[in-house]
Image (cartoon, rainbow, N blue to C red; front, side, top):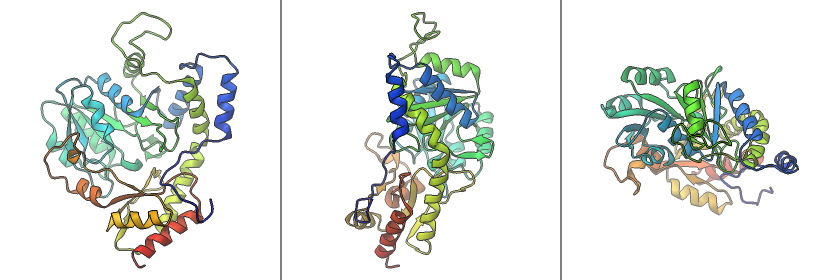
Length: 366
């Protein structure tokens, strides 16, 4: 891109490697439905995260729904969900007739506030859905949530949609702390298959349930023997071909995402009206570059006029018409008012980052 070309907020990156994987598969006269390529893609994710099992499905919302079903969540059950998240998180359990119960998030991490979660638990609570916002761990530590769920007899589901490449500790990938962890491969994610999701677990029984749930309750593929009720949330070999190539690129993307955040941090230092959310770059891989910006909408308009795309961060779920629930959620409300995602695509160059920082500094007179 030249300095004058538009810089989008996000854009997926596919290349010759994905083309080669697809072309190779198309010479095999396959059925396109999930088979050996899908198994390989699952193995790549399991190996990378350290999980015993990985089960891929058609998207990252269905993955959360299947996790909830496998853990016994049903109609009327309550699931604790952060009020700052993508709406897929509560929708995934609403689809079952379960009730998402919203709690606010930590101001530093935008991950669920554990004390507010503790206060929201009732006899109807079946699970807690912890969303690792932008790959970040809760400030109180993941062990505190594991202990809370254990003490109260509820399941811990990890919505790790934004967190592939992020860790709680060097030997514990995000998504490994709960009973089941869920990832998304939609277009904006660090790796993408267009649409797609994955579930990881170390529990053999849960893995078996998940595999049956995604494939009509079958004992195995290609049979019509059904020991349980299941659905059709299978993957495709074409998606798996793309995912295989994308997973090979993940390690270098993790490195570059961290460099991108560091370049922004250096270029935007010393602006009181603008604040990047912090990341522990030893463990966390930023998915999007998230920030709080005074006069956010004016800044976004200024950047758009300068050929730079942005995206406002998620508004409070309880204030969206889909839910429309009363309540006070100060951190979620602050993000809904001031939260802004800057350009975050993996192909972003250092020169483009400098250009973006210059325009932000110009807007604030810095």
